[in-house]
Length: 207
Image 1 (tube, rainbow, N blue to C red):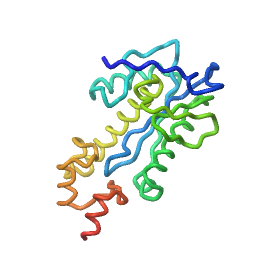
Image 2: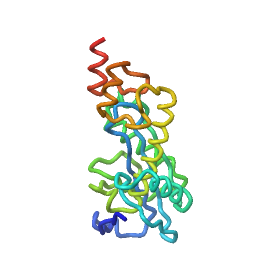
Image 3: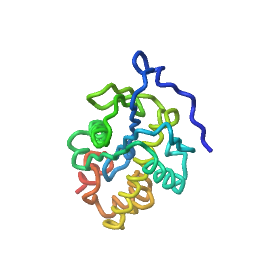
Image 4: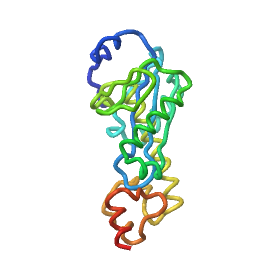
């Protein structure tokens, strides 16, 4: 079982040592050539801890699914936010990711007093927010958010596969694998492809 490195929020500076409702936020789907970017926000219940939380990338799909169900059952609240392919192409992937994160936080039933985000960039929010590099391996709430975001995006990719089976979205989840790039060359982009991403743009330029 992956173990989480010790990290205390009071390491973030003055004010972070005080008791508060803290939401963890993470995203899935920045790198793929197709589909939305998905973010999740989770406020865990300290009285109902969830065993086995870890960075979603080190967990098997089955384990992620089971943990996702536990998170939805035992967290104080959680929410998912999306930014569409159109928004990714209009804004760029970084700004679209920030938008999805903001939507996830705003979708929480309870308003968090502080927010911690995986990575080194944070969305603009109405409460204090801090970035934690590798936070999905250090902070339980961010681990939980990474799991929810990944499970939700994988589910959306299965829907994309049903709509556009020629591309193999169920297998590669939109990432630029050789099989996906070959399908893109053979069939051209579908409506789910991100036209601002270089491999898709190159196929479009070819005509």
